[in-house]
Length: 453
Image (cartoon, rainbow, N blue to C red):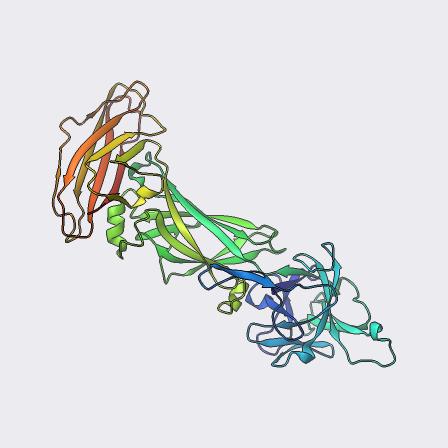
């Protein structure tokens, strides 16, 4: 069970030494503030959900942590926190001489120790025959760096006593973070050129957050385009070997939202986006995949690869949704939905009829005319859809009803190809001429059509 020990008295987290040096208190949690709560045998007390290396759910963990349990505390390199007189040191190997009793001082009801409870940790001392077995003394872990003397050890074991002393020997038990999230980028027909599908990466912690805040590491594992923007600073992102972006989760908060947008190519031009990104068709035909990120709590990252819940980066897909507020498009019996028309549409057999109709938002009446252009062309890739016939739009004027609705049909016939599938680029363009101008310069939609033989 990975956890932090926070000292309200010192306003900081117990921090492991780099090697065999002294323990310290740090204001900001990080890789050296996350420890593993283990049993007497040195094995992790494993409760809660477990996730495999790809972020999939594996099993529910077993074990509980209760008041007055005897525990050991392990570091990422396999060493154990060891009492040594008044000092706290690290020792590798046998956990037997590194035992503590954990005492629940306040918090949730019952004996089980949970996130946010107040605990004290007492180091076992040699058995004193002059005392009864239930009256043995301990040295209690203590964080007391308030004298501002650099030579003073910030974390020690206090004098021998039956019970913990004042505030400096009481800590808040904080379980490690499991980071979850979602990213949905939206784009509207009314956006000129649909230049930037935009939205946010929403991150959520598994509990209410840490007292002094925390940090989440974000790495882009895929960007379906040449560039994207992340955060208020507009940082350009690359994948899969781009930088790690540290995101601050405010103190006491369990969620944060960070702006995210795809810059180029856009959802308006999925054919160009496909050609730019490259790769096989199989993993991009769903249409809504704009890329992916992995996220992990910065403190938990020190345990990566050791199969602890929350220690390995969790994958999050970046999904694109088209609002379709002005345009609805249908190929035969296939209607383009808000997600599926992001890149390529699958159609079984040649769909000869393409229908463009109005969406939930209607075109406004004005003193002028609307014009429409629809083209179906061969996909610009070798050995695919090299032949096609399409009926041209003889009349480009778009008839719009009094309520702003419209519908226009285009008939085309793909010529069968020996290829396993054929690809077409479809372009829809609606504009207006006249004064006053009721709309943006144009409504544009461009996407790919896959026809299976």
